[in-house]
Image (cartoon, rainbow, N blue to C red; front, side, top):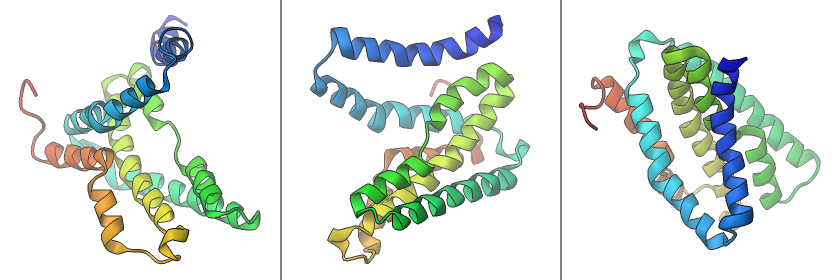
Length: 188
């Protein structure tokens, strides 16, 4: 029982701490908008890049992991878009349904898996996260790009620009590249 407390209390405790801080100490939305920007543009990319870069990719079943993860995400995407179409949801609603169907908090799982399975679990969690994030970011960008302002047509240049400027996607790809090159140098 003690191990599970050590595994689950810290990440969920941080969620609770954030909720309490928002309610009692830092209720201003502008503060949280700044924190979200810091996490999205700096902290989360640094975590993703360093976690993925520290993994020996040759020791993992990367192809099988990718296939299982991507097929699952594609199934969720198809079901989400199908439901949105079935219920005749407008484009903004469709993007919400779509994101709800494929975007989940895999980062919370990443925080927990190391505690449950040790270093091997952390490696698997880092790689799984690295396979999920770029795929979901790409699909989400494509669904947003097909909105009413685009006339239902993709602008490849605009989509590519959005993907190339996405810090989470870049961090994951960078992490894989650094892992293939032997990992981060000491002290980085």
